[in-house]
Length: 275
Image 1 (cartoon, rainbow, N blue to C red):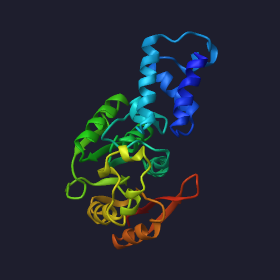
Image 2: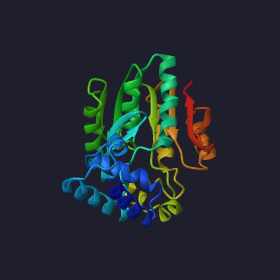
Image 3: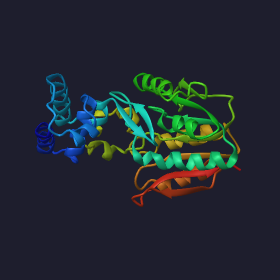
Image 4: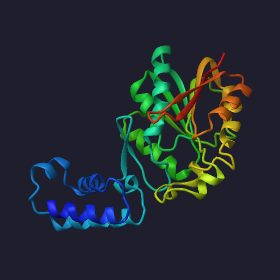
């Protein structure tokens, strides 16, 4: 087995995959051999069914397909989420948005949350698992909506999380929310021309935010602020360098905003409290 892992690692490395050894181990685990077995029984022979499955996954990876799509599941905020073609992959960057919302909800007693452009549901579902709240996850894409529904079931939150098929740019509701969170598309026209090979596999509708990347903020902030209770939180993830523009959009919607940096020191979230 040790030699087979080396074979997979070499194939991934030659294709330019970073962390080739780690990805080889993830693929082996998905094929049926746990990392613990790799560590404790390195000389165990690999059954042909497992080796065939692992080689097929490595082939897909060397062609540029994201590891997360190949594995079919990825962790976010400590919870599992089904992912695949048609849905944005949950990223560690977005955990800051979830963390800020969690802190607010725990301090203010939870309530009803709107998760806009929900995708896999990673933000809203994580909040439902961590806080005393109910969440409505709004998603337009049919493919992403399917994953959203599966992840609600996977995380056993069907009693507190509702999937709503809707376009957040035009949808109207009489609901009154205690918090609104969103990780909208925010890549610019230039960003889209320079996508990493893996990112190009993800749905453009979940990535492209207009020529300057700000289209969704301009639409959702004035529209959804009206659904937010006084004292409620509005928090959004942003792209690199967008903090000043998004703070201005918050101001135009009647909210004074603050910016939060991620672990790399990059402004990643803009948030405000409705007065």
